[in-house]
Image (cartoon, rainbow, N blue to C red):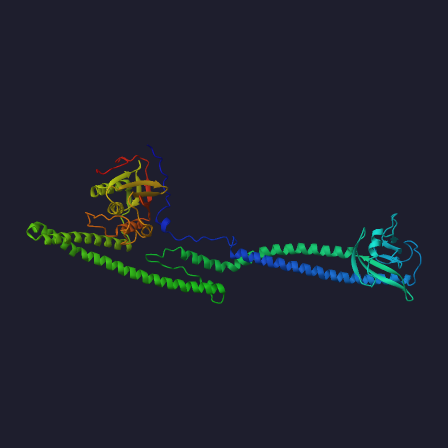
Length: 539
């Protein structure tokens, strides 16, 4: 079976790529839901509303002024029309009867009605006659317009009306009185076309100017908002940069601060910047105190573990000496000494694990070299098979070497601890499958068993120190170490993290899998000349 050659990792991938300086993403200042976009939209809407109100107010005021002028013109026309009819003229004499005379505005109309509402005389002053001769003349009104004008109030009130075939007019009606008797009514009107055209042109010009003002407002507001929000954006960039720092462990230097010009308490943004700087100062002091405390604890654990090694070695030595004469001492004493030796050995293992964790916490001193993970896994599975012959050990390897940049001894310890965890917490006969594969630029190590699984409330803290899942997974006595110290998986997590990798676990009844991901150093497509894809312990 052949495998394609995996892709080579980028030369830029390394520690800096994993733990580099946080990248601050600069968002679009006018992206969706941003303050800049909302400000531009609101300012533009406010200007548009103001332009609309100004346009409406201007149009109404202009119309009012023009209508006042037209009403005065209508009064003048009415005075000139009424003068020749102070006495009822009698029967109609046609359009040239004298109601309308040259000198009045073009389009002026006048209609004379008798007491029964019948038109006696009427016409409209036009600029050009029907035959095309120059000069104003009076033309007859359409019948529809005469009928409409008959309904105009005759109390001297001015009103606007749209006449059939003539258009929009401003009209006024009067009663004609001879002595004490009403002898008829007179209706006079002047066209509103000039007023309507003027208002329409005014609204059109105002609309054009308003659109230009709104467009200019958009560009001006964008520029103004960008300039005004620069301090706030710098403040957000500082906060984002701080939020991406690793603050959970180790020594942290919070050298990032808001610039002095953005921390001026005279402005709203400056007060926020000043508060952020105070908060960062407090956080830096708290982190420094935490680091000092952690350093003291690590140093204490390392010193205590180191000092305990010698007395524990002496206890184990004296306990081993009693083996020579145990048949001469009472049975209870011999059993007690064997337990002393066993517990001393387990305590020695615990001290070694605590010392290792203390060293890893204070800064791992790793011998990083290209190492073949397949070889490490083979050796670890072989040792596990010898230690736990009552389990079924399976191994799956690729046909090419999987090389990672790491400390071979520490990675071997990772595999030993994972296999020991599977052996210790699963019953005899459990299948433990170990695999090596490549996923992109990462090497993947898996340890899977079909044991009882880890409860959900425990799986989230299995990599914590002294975390145990006794309620779910069986605990078998460890012949090599005298029992689990509860630090095996914590050491796995610390070593993998020191290699800039990750470790995770997924578990359900009948399937528990630990996955270790490590950055690759180099890959080779050459076939791997090692053991077969599966190894089984005799059972």
